[in-house]
Amino acid sequence: MKVLHDEPLKKHTSFRVGGPAKVFAIPADEEELQKLIAFLHEESLPFYILGNGTNLLVSDEGVDRVVVEIGKNLDQLTLLKEEGDTVTFRALAGTLLGKTASYAAKHHLTGMEALRGIPGTVGGAVTMNAGAYGTEIKDVLVSADVLTEKGELRTLSAEELDLGYRHSIIPEENYIVVSAVFRLKKGDDDAIQAAMQDFQQRRQDKQPLDKPSAGSTFKRPEGYFAGKLIEDTGLRGFRHGGAMVSEKHCGFVVTDGPATAREIYWLIGEIRKRVLLEQGVELTPEVKLWGKF
Image (cartoon, rainbow, N blue to C red; front, side, top):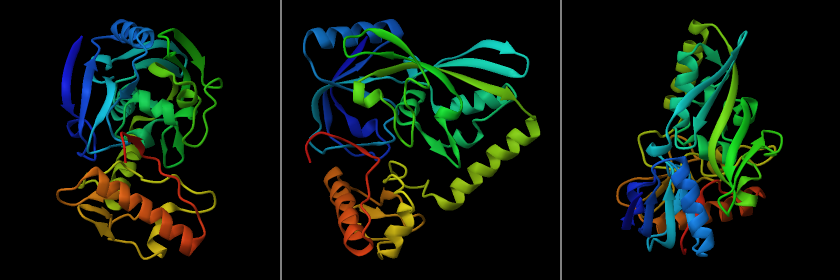
């Protein structure tokens, strides 16, 4: 296992800000991950699990916990079963969701086209039931292998995971996703490719992909769109230091030049306050916070 000390977390997050992790561990495979989690539990050492760092804001001071990276070492796709026009395959938690969607397309499978542009890992996607353009992980997920806090391996069906809008039981139970099994149907190659290109073009046209961000900053309030609420509050382009509300899509907080985590955190809080005061709607951040703010 590779272990680093005082590793700058800004190298591992899409916001590109954040202080160091006191201990940064990179398990070599599934077995090593399980042993590490069991060890951390036995020693009562608190830890964080890091995927692709695309939905995360780390404080400028960093974190004292052990950070366990589930990334390239747990990046694998395996075809499991083919029954008629239905195919089942397994993805390890560190596999990028975009790579997983491309794998499905390569095997003539439809159902994940809209998920290709989501930048996180399979583990993170299952944890938050990631979705886009009307498709969610729950639509294609069969089951997931998870580790408990004690390092015990369990297999949970999609139903047992209680997947809802940006929700699963995984954070509540402190589970760690090791792998996921997906089931898709065969489709028309031309239609699959056309759909993927269409979704990608929509993202390029509407989202600030050229600036560091953590994706959509807020969950969609019931009956509203976060970006529209923020725009109607007059906050398009509003900034604090190097953090700003995207002028391209107000649902994104981005960095424009050098920025600190504190500036991003302040801006998120100010957006929530102003939208609540002027629109009467409370916004809930999607972005996870690590460290002290």
